[in-house]
Amino acid sequence: MDLATDLPICVTCGVQYAAPRPDCPVCEDERQYVGWDGQSWTTLATLAAEGFRGRLEPEGPGVYGIGSEPKISIGQRALLVRTPDGNILWDCVPFLDDDLIAQVDALGGISAIAVSHPHFYGSMVDWSHAFGDVPVYVHAADEQWLGRRSPTVELWTGDTLTIGSGLTLVNGGVHFAGGTVLHHAGGENGQGALFSGDILQVVLDRRYVSFMYSYPNYIPERPETVRRAVRLLEPFAFETIYGAFWQTVVRADGHAAMHRSADRYLHFVADPAPPAPAG
Image (cartoon, rainbow, N blue to C red; front, side):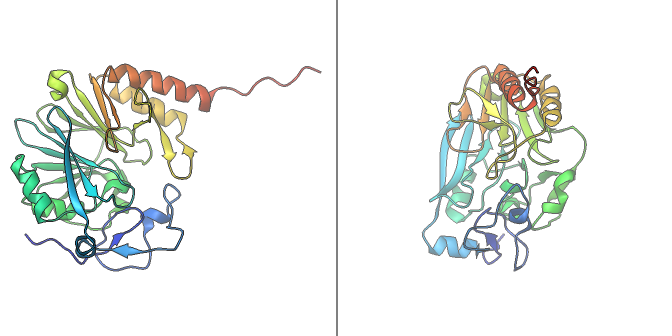
């Protein structure tokens, strides 16, 4: 199927819309921002003409990062998670062209797409169409942010959803009400892997994650939301946590890293105020 190469893509957040419009609601929300020079747009055709190209590189056992060179908008990379029952594309990126489609096809293609939150919707409908109209799983709590609707977008509800053997979506609700992570029980050679986007953001020392309502505007997430996310993830074993950007991966003891990260975060955001001076 031909790609929708002429549809508008927000330059700042990378979300593709179904028709031209003056504004990007995703960027006008307080978790994002409108570019300093005002709202601007691009398209897949423009990106290709400007020399952008796909980037596909290994990120872990059976896991390939997918992005672009140079980076577009937020700069996240998607992850192709290879499983015996079919490959899952975790999160999405704005860029796609025939060459990148061919590279992904060589790795077995895509059976389904799952997206953590609206900032990483990218051109997810085009990605679905390019690989045979595969389902795109988006939590219903984030339906209002869809820039382009399609029958392939499947809205789900509740705390968890099984999308394949050993593959579970978990709605932690961090960052967005529909903020979702993917657990792969068979990942990391059976030790388990968590694909967290920036719902649990792997930080730069890569031993911890953190939790934010808004990253660019430095608004911390509510303590009760963080506690709920940790409770929901407690039953799942995972050695590794794959974050949103290239090489942002907690490589060992991921489950414990989640706990110590939540404890550290809650110590700073939920610690009671010091007592007033005596007298």
